[in-house]
Length: 113
Image 1 (cartoon, one colour):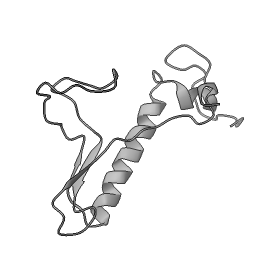
Image 2 (cartoon, one colour):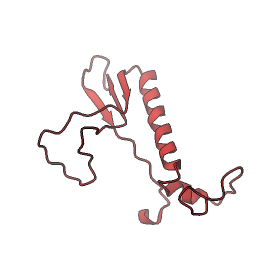
Image 3 (spheres, one colour):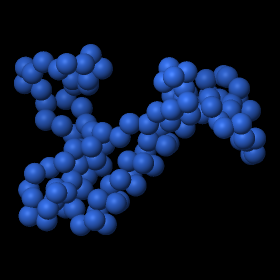
Image 4 (cartoon, helix red, strand yellow):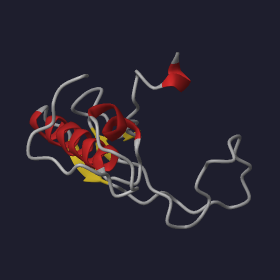
């Protein structure tokens, strides 16, 4: 990733010097969110093209009613949502709903070595 960046700001919104490596990891600069949203939208479009029904981007989940969640990072508010949901993923007559959560990460980050 030692490519030269053309027509690109010298500094990130976080104040650090911009580089491809930095853009792949910095949550404040917006590039992680842009990549996430592009993959989310592409996934939803592919589900539609594959013939899935009821494809929804960022569907709200049902509110919790006393359940205990394993991870502290889980969003427990009534505004909790995933990235994409769809019906008919496994077969055309299937009424079950698939929920997808898109994750974007930098595989070259030091924390992944």
